[in-house]
Image 1 (spheres, one colour):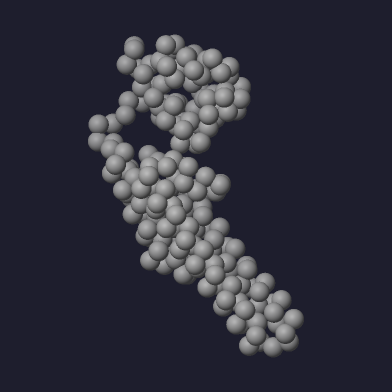
Image 2 (cartoon, rainbow, N blue to C red):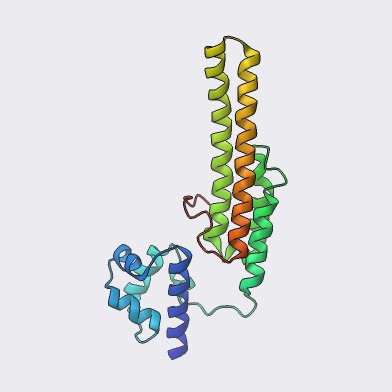
Length: 197
């Protein structure tokens, strides 16, 4: 009984931290008292099934994930290493919008360790997708506006290419920054990104 409480406590605490939530923020989002969250995370109380369900929904998890025992082969070091590999795989095609998603997406789907850190992996894929969309639209707008402003197709193409190169540099910078955060085991890597996957 105590062991299942400590598993639940650890899973809730870990999931809360992965989402970048304080105990107070989790309590507010789940509409549960702060003292209940504190007692659950200390393992001093066994919460009702309804409370576990509400917490699971708030943390974007299944109930089974909250009450499960961590698997013996789940190694945080190798998980972060796999996440770093997935992130750096974006560099291979970082300069081609939408194609830059293929390798990280396949990597994510095939690697069970990464799927246990779904929020970080999902945010990385979401960033690449949104970068692609913004880059494609931005290049089109830059081409259109510069053609109107300068009246020649050559000038518009030049400005569009400059926009594209700046977008690629930004993507490379964000991949490097995320790799650094993952090296420091920072759960809040790309925390500003919505999770689209």
